Amino acid sequence: YEASEFMVYELSRGDSICFVPNHLPEGLALSPDGVISGRAEEGGETTFAVRVVDANLDYAEKQLHVEIAEQPPVLTLTPLSESVVENSGSGVRVRLSRTGSTRRPLVVDLSAVTPVGTVLDMPDKVEIPVGSSSTIFTVKPVDDQFVEGDRVVILRAAADGAEDGSCEIEIVD
Image (cartoon, rainbow, N blue to C red; front, side, top):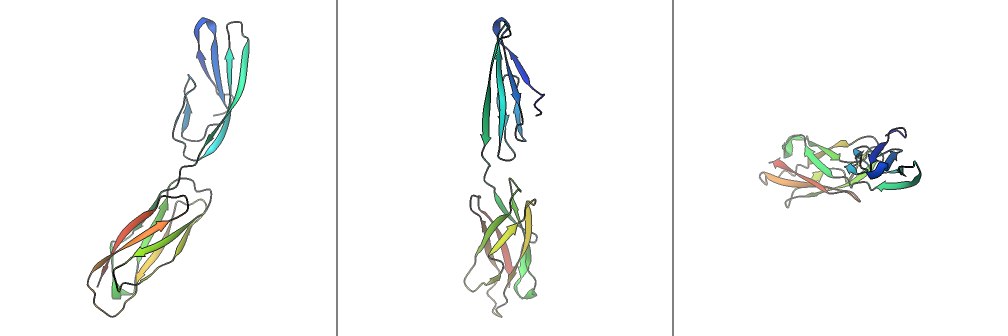
């Protein structure tokens, strides 16, 4: 909202109340009766004036400050293929995504829950850069020359202040 945009709510006997927002965070709206509603896309602060005018055009005005807390990001892991052959020498590309603000880089810790005898070549940490909501990394099963049969591994992603994500990948052996 620009400072020139305002909402007026008529009260009884010629009195009125006026809300003048300087700026509301994206996703929020100010109704004519002064209710701020919606879901902010990012955290932020706003200040707006509330002016009460009576029938004699006398008024009182107060500046109000609202702070919107950032929502914690949610991490999602999405394998770009569902399985990989252990002795193929190739790996599975996995997309790591986050919701919320992209104003800062997000360092994510990666881990795997694997059956006994399964070794994976994958990074311990991945960074989602500023301005991006996702990045891609590769997970490769290490060929151990033994046939253990097909099995499933679970990848996990965790970051401070974020909701963890996970996915499954099948290793064909």
